[in-house]
Image 1: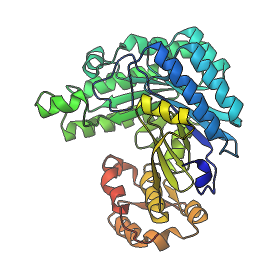
Image 2: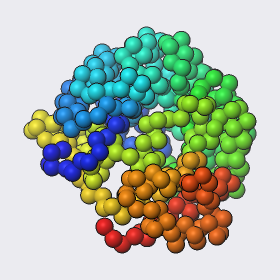
Image 3: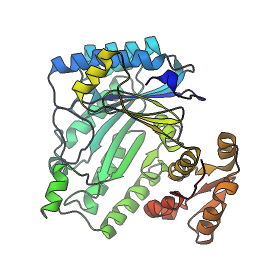
Length: 391
């Protein structure tokens, strides 16, 4: 199957690029990642460039965001990264003001590499800090320490980056509220413009899942996790960060534009082993295996493992579920422009029920979850699952 066989009414303006290589695998990670020698990275980069070329042929509008995720994208040797960046700019029309994000692990970058990335069009760096506690970093299986986070953020600034994000995690094994406080305050002190703060989710197939089944993973209770989340919100908003999405905080103007594409349920291309995309009326999932990925590309095929048709009803439900994660909520006008139906005509019963319970509020033409209820947002958004039975 090819892009020519998909019904594409709106060409994606966002591109996700998956680089599946890491120096080692963290104990909580279930992403598509591999520990591989440079020779395998070189082969992968060649095949990825070819997928980029084929994907770009289906694009007829400028890209407004490009996101390199992983894995650890900066695990690729600098010459390969430079060549890949050049390939994207060669084949795609990338808008002059596009947000171009590169994920990196603290300690995995050096100043010259960061300067190269900046010179090649990358203008945003996202560091997977996770914690500023060396004890907890060891618990997670991370290879860096807290000092490496501060050094990496400083180097990014020296290299010319003015848009830097760090990821933090809470609800970790043997983590306390005091650990969360220290991590948030140290993250703020680095001068970053964006912070993502995520709950730990124990995923099947990970060492954490095995240790939990054996009774050897000691996680905080729900009440302590709630206290951690409230502390994160209080500290970051007090420091001038806007809480624009349940797990994300930004200085004014530094919201993650690429991630907003996901939360607004807008289409995007995805390239690389294990990458996901949404093009036309289909969700696309690439094969995860490096061998299968290489074979598909060499045969001249797209490396899609799954091509899932998204019905109109499913798209509308997903728009509500993702959009309600945002402080801006779901706009009635935007919904009607996109689907040709009034929001209250589609979800009126659900909206009125949730509003009567004060679980939703309407403000300036948009529906949103009251800020105080964000910690229980999952219970609210699930009310929009499987409520429509028409295509």
